Length: 117
Image (cartoon, rainbow, N blue to C red; front, side, top):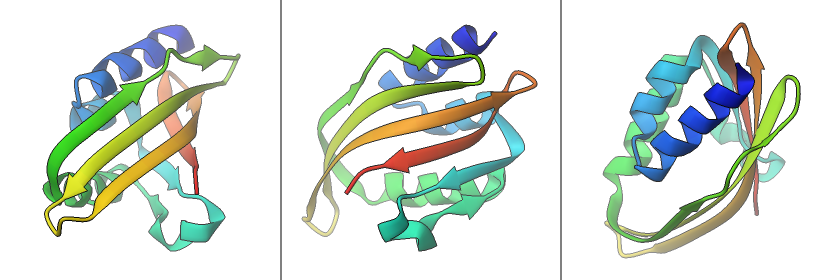
């Protein structure tokens, strides 16, 4: 089942259907963990995750580049490499090259942990 979840997530992300991915694949009490440098941005719970995602998406003026790798899957975890390059409404260009590790339990994603600088 983890393979199905991983591939569903990748497909939704590639279509930029981020909120739909969260609604469908994450548990209600999921954890969103940012890198240590940005730990104050970490949130707990699906509702908080969706608010955070909506806030980020609403600040995007233009997508310059977006790429999601195929997942690498183990028994309870999978990981993807994601590159996001956007122009924000404040004209700031943001490029994030990250590794994301997802933990799965009872056929739902219970944690996502981001690694980037």
